[in-house]
Image 1 (cartoon, rainbow, N blue to C red):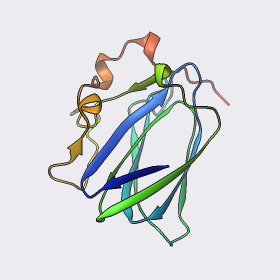
Image 2 (cartoon, rainbow, N blue to C red; image 1 turned 180 degrees about the horizontal axis):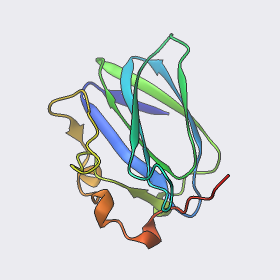
Image 3 (spheres, one colour; image 1 turned 90 degrees about the vertical axis):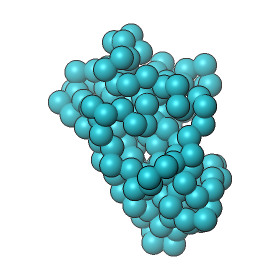
Length: 138
């Protein structure tokens, strides 16, 4: 469960050794949710998908394991709930810089509030292969 204020941007995060698939639901407020493929060898590596999600609309997004995830809050506050396929391990968390110009996510906020930790994340091109999940053909 994540509770955030207007303009807060979280992400883009993923787990490496214990990848988490996530079912994301907004229970209060409005967010712009983003999923970025960071799976080494994937045919969609480096591509992202964004979706505006509003509480009460019945919209959820499934983020597969190996996909980086983030969101920004568009309402006064927002509550986001995740159902995850594995436990969160802080030591296993990795991420990609939200403002990476090569990924070029079109965030709908001009000056987001970003944590110091998220502001220090590397651009996708600077993440070594050892820190990227591997894509496995289905």
